[in-house]
Amino acid sequence: MGVSDNAKADPVLSNFAHEVGPSQPIAIEGKRTRWNLNGSLESGAKVLPAPSGIVEYKPEEMIVTVRAGTTVQDLNSHLASHQQRTSLPDRGGTVGGAIAVGHNDLHHLGRGPVRDAVLQLRYISSEGRVITCGGPVVKNVTGFNLHKLMVGSYGTLGLIAEATLRTNPIPSEQTWVKTTIDPKLILSILLRPSAVLWDGMATWVHLEGYLADVDAQKTALRKYGTLHEEDSAPELPACRWSLPPADLFNLDSLNIGRFVASIGVGTVWAEHPQPIRTPDKGKQLIEKRMKQQFDPENRLNPGRLVGNWT
Image (cartoon, rainbow, N blue to C red; front, side, top):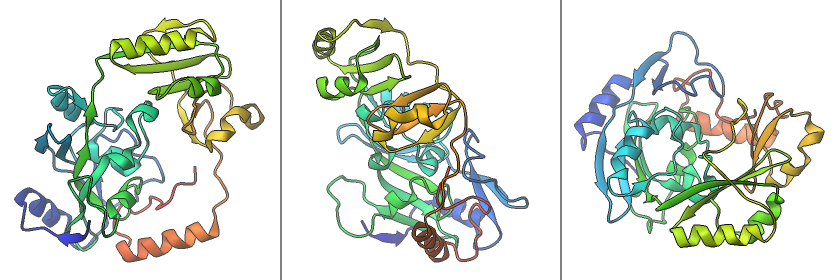
């Protein structure tokens, strides 16, 4: 998974790199659904839309190459014709935005993290070059994992132009159930629930698979409590927290207000914003050096943080 300059290989990306150029502050916009996360873009920065469109889809290999400006909804609609999907969260935004932010889907337990879905990225460097990192097949394991580094970087190290993603099958049966069974017990009972959400009193479980498998999981749960079929997940509060998974059962001490916690993951949705954590000096030093290596003139998404302390 080496790094290479492929500006001449694709005229769309070549033209996009030319628009980005080698100088002046610049940022890439999608649908702006998470535009103000991790800092605000400095005024005066040039803002460009990312190129869009599906480049190549190999359903038999379960990989798809898509340009960053394509919406996650459009991508999943295209994949659905082959009963496949990605693990990118669909919040109305674009593929590039979902990768740049790096937040995982609500069904993280079943679909896996965004970082694992990204096999290859093509991004525009601060010098205005098209850089390819990663590889389009899962078995590539050599070289630098720069494509993993770009996930959650908020466009501060490179401007994502194109991604090759791993897809996964859409299960034939999907359902939500609500119960008062201890969520920790649920994780020990079920092999791989798609999501386990807890608000301190009730637990919502998303089950996926063949009908017989889903029924078997329901039967296993009913040995420990009553189940109620639900149309959807509970309404999530507006503020997203990130905590160690073991801390999710001590939320009362944090004065967090109403919350919904993703058990086994560490994500919490709460009424109040998460307090800014004290920066680790070692982490700050690493982030500063990374930024200097990738973007010495600080022209990529100026005003946004390399790391995320909220």
